[in-house]
Length: 349
Image 1 (cartoon, rainbow, N blue to C red):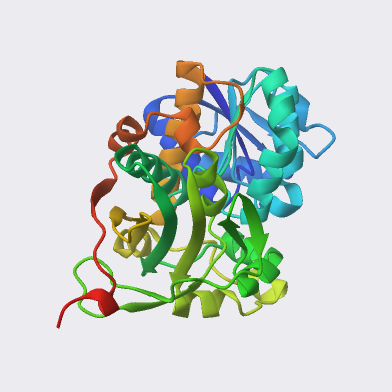
Image 2 (image 1 turned 90 degrees about the vertical axis):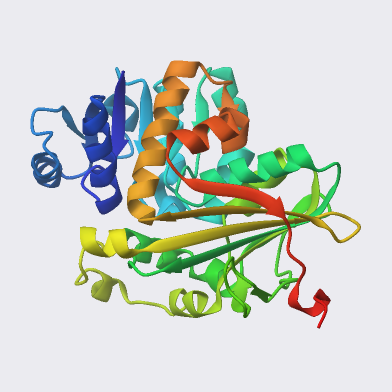
């Protein structure tokens, strides 16, 4: 089994390479700068692994002889589609760590037919939020006969963004400031206001203020769950910070990403509230530490399974490619499904 990592000198990619090394999976480092690739290979203990310098015109050749590609090079909205096309042309299964909503929708809309014809499986957005959330939503749908709405809420405490994440935020600033896409009545729409502005998190007595946010689960969940409305929310304070433009020259001066200690102190809580037409429903919950480390584990496991399990070709949501409960257990995430709590206004005094 041989897996190419594109953008291999980046912060997230080096965590992916470390995970591949830990599992004894052969890695090929692919990127645009030979010296940066050499330094990255040395840093993660893969100095003897193949390194291939590539631009957009040579990407297909750089993936030759590999079974799958893990793309870690954002902003994906600017460059991701070319990498997906190159992987398909090279006959490689493909996953990426993207969280950019419009990029994700573009891959589904434009490349599904070609991937299917070439016998290649493409599963974008296999990151700490979208993949487990998509799988949990699928498990929720298995337990309900009808779902009117799914509200996806992300709350992250501690840690900090990498330079790559900040560059992606800058590149998708319009979507961040407007809240991105909402799925409603059979189609995706921009500009719809959020139906929910707060959430009571597990173990909390008071609601947390939330704001509309372009989460990738809004694009993936309706592809396998029959639902009328799906919207994404994030903590309002985080949305306000990310919606403030950071000059590219300032991003370049910042640390590459959070330190290992900061990553391990980080906590994330992702909530999936599914409401039935009668106002009841279920709540899915995913909790963990270290978003970047978790993403690396998920991306490697996803690529490994596409190679080993002979997934259906095409562009797929995570729940269309992987068995939900088994995958969640394999990557060690804490998750649960329980009755949806009543909103604060519905609770008896």
